Length: 220
Image (cartoon, rainbow, N blue to C red; front, side, top):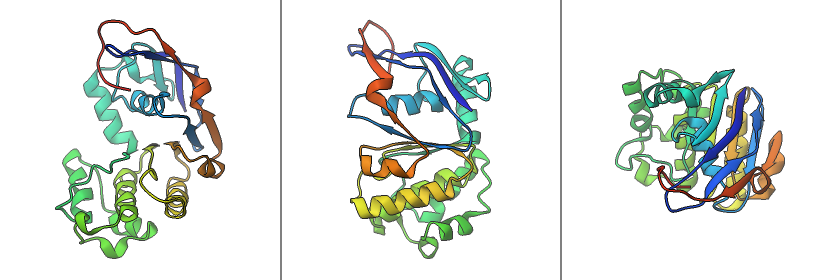
């Protein structure tokens, strides 16, 4: 279970954000909806430990991660969180397989690679260079890279943002299926996809702007 309490994040020269207390239950899927700039990606980064809260806590199974050092949070993210980035963050000149095998540097077991690629419908593309893939295929590789770790938590930032609705729905359904049993938190602008999730969260109601102040780092 993920819990946020009294969570705020401030940025230099910008309005900060204050979040209503949230709870994400183990094994359920959540979709975060709202306009650009309303705090969706910032919330994912706070949960992942990429950003440090200005005030408040993020806890997983009762352990306050936000109180740990950056090194400890990084280790937790590598071990427990699968993060799917909107811009894929794949190395174009490397193959699908090699992009995922890079995780072995972080001591991730990738022995289930072929099975996972098959489940995502890209098993035949294992040795193809990423630059030769379509947008939908790249997105599936990004999903595979996140799920190969068998993470307890999956965070997905606009995983279908660059795709048309038909392809995006297919990708989202595949993500939900392969992430079953894990806590899945997904950001999307497409309300048509919200019906696929267990719960939807309106970020316009959950996050509110607070006055900026000097100090802090990062970007919303």
